[in-house]
Amino acid sequence: MPTTMATPRTSLIRFSTLYLFLNLLAWAPSLLVWARPATFLQDFRVTWSDSHIKQIDGGRSIQLVLDQSSGCGFVSKNQFLFGRVSMKIKLIPGDSAGTVTAFYMNSNTDNVRDELDFEFLGNRSGQPYTVQTNVYAHGKGNREQRINLWFDPSADFHTYSILWNHFHVVFYVDEVPIRVYKNNEKRGIPYPKSQSMGVYSTLWEADNWATRGGLEKIDWSKAPFYAYYKDFDIEGCPVPGPTNCASNLRNWWEGPGYQQLDAIQARRYRWVRMNHVIYDYCADRSRFPIIPPECVAGV
Image 1 (cartoon, rainbow, N blue to C red):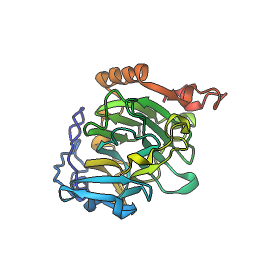
Image 2: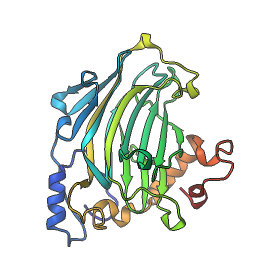
Image 3: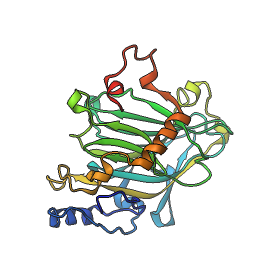
């Protein structure tokens, strides 16, 4: 992968191939890794309610189901330390109030967990879909931000990605950055960098908070609810794996083109922040009378 910006691959990179190249070409200034198609079960496993996850097209895509009996979820078979994860998701159409479709990374370490969240909050028909992001570092969360999407995410598949390196965490929607959380450890601000994380997704009922703070309840007459996933793309350092991978700044996701937003991405990011942000914990004085330090430092 060149160290200049490039459009991320949309097909799944096989981890064994990636790290064979890392071991053989650690001296090289860049890496080029070719992908091959993979099915869902090659890299993921169901965490709950197997009957509510249906494989489609030989496992190249899946359907998640939520009904009154259960939601469902899945997780990657490997954990990772730095890299990029992407999924194409088609969200629940129509009246989806009270539902949450989540795509996130989690260290699964309880009180000291690190976590990077996409949560898609259901809505009443005709209202914008809201995306909530959150960042946990060293067990500290409560860093919610919400945006209203500028398109209908239930009409077609859209790509949702998390870039995680030594410099920042960036949340993308169709390659448009919607949130940046910078590494400000030098200022004493926690940053997730020492714990590997798995890649998770769930579909579940959360009508006590998800839509208008819990005012809008789920309408079970509209059930079952369906969300669809495809093009699972994970490129990162697997744990367990080569011990020098995570610290290797020659990994493509650590390259100069990924250490900060370029001019085009920065312009798109400003557009999102100006036009689509509906909640930012940094500006919530009722919750945080003292501005959180990462907000002062720049997130």
